[in-house]
Amino acid sequence: MKYFNKTILAVAVTLASSQALAAGFQLNSQSATGIGRAFAGDAVIADNASVLSRNPAAMAMFDKKSLSVGVAYADLDVNITDVTGIAGTANYGSVDGAAESKIIPNFYYIQPINDSWAFGVAGFSNFGTGTDLTGLANVNPQLPNGASLPAPVDLLGNTEIVTMNFNASLSYRFNEHFSIGAGVDIIYGEGNLSREGNLPSPPDGNMVPTSLVDVDADGVAFGGIIGTVYEFNADNRLGMSYRFSPEFSASGHVNYTQTTYDEINIPMPDIFQVAGFHQLNDTFALHYTAQLTTWGDFDEITLSDGQIANGTATGNASLKQYQWDDSWLFSVGGTYTINEQWKVRAGYMHDQGVVGELSSLSIPDSDRNWYTAGASYNLSSQTTIDMGIAFVRGEDVHVTEASDVLKSDVTASTRSDAVYYSVQYNYQF
Image 1 (cartoon, one colour):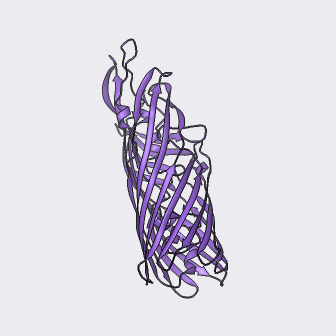
Image 2 (cartoon, one colour; image 1 turned 45 degrees about the vertical axis):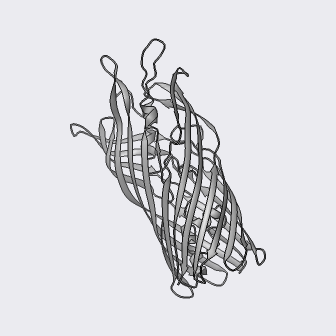
Image 3 (cartoon, one colour; image 1 turned 90 degrees about the horizontal axis):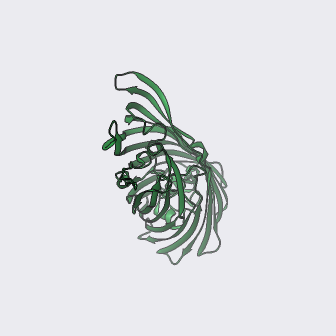
């Protein structure tokens, strides 16, 4: 098909979100406690079992079995406005609310084995959400001479993504100051994707419904995490972790330009973070985090094991190359103890965008600022309820992207905001 040869942005995000409201398609929603403090110090605070999502070494600070179960609701507000092509002569309109809101669950369990060893299991998500730009893909504006133009269908469509990270970890305490930990990540992902719209059909050029991409794929990949904690004393400690991410291969039905492929191969970024916690007095603690995500590793999406309709093998294909940048996240927060029942917390996070020179309609990335607050209520000496809320504010971005369908650049303005609501139940046995 001549209208769509090399660019297939959609497949690039088949198993990763384009609207996760963090750098690239990364999620920050692993716990209500973390949301309330902008995840400042989350790799070392260890006030409940959710620390397992950030640093397995922190399990060494637990002397009792601990369970945390929570859910986050991401109320996403993604707007794509003034989409135009053919040097501004073709106007395709706007989409308000391009991303659906999501419910994101999590659970964590930590069990000390003895004074030195601890074991934990967890389930949470680091990536995933969805967008729908299908409405723009069905717009066919008319030129002054009456001719109808196709939409840039290769840049628009519907994407629905789910990923889940299952983790099993061990920690070891050398002494009262130094602990290490390591874990294995089992990452499951599934994606449903379509890119279709009205395109001109030879020989008369009449607009007919055409499917460019139809994807239904899932897969499992393995990664890992290592971490360390250094405790200066009971009130001051530092933590550090490094999460190794795999190249994700998803198998299933992938139909692309009259060729069926069995696998999509997506490189995922590693995550490195350093965190600190300081209890300044009986009522107030300060905490902070610096996190680097190696989005520069997300450089190319490939397809494997292609076959055309007559069964002839076509091998592998390069779908999309990226020029993303590594991204830093910085956050600072505070926790204030009101009394034996209540703690309150607040935080601020600055999250750098990753998109460099090659911008995208489907990934309206930008620097983002997080403003967060939360609280904990002790139901008993063993049971705590945590609540967190985060207001995420992005920037207005002007996007220019080349469309193979139009043989022209497409321009638009994009903005991504969100509000996260989260609640969590914690129990110490």
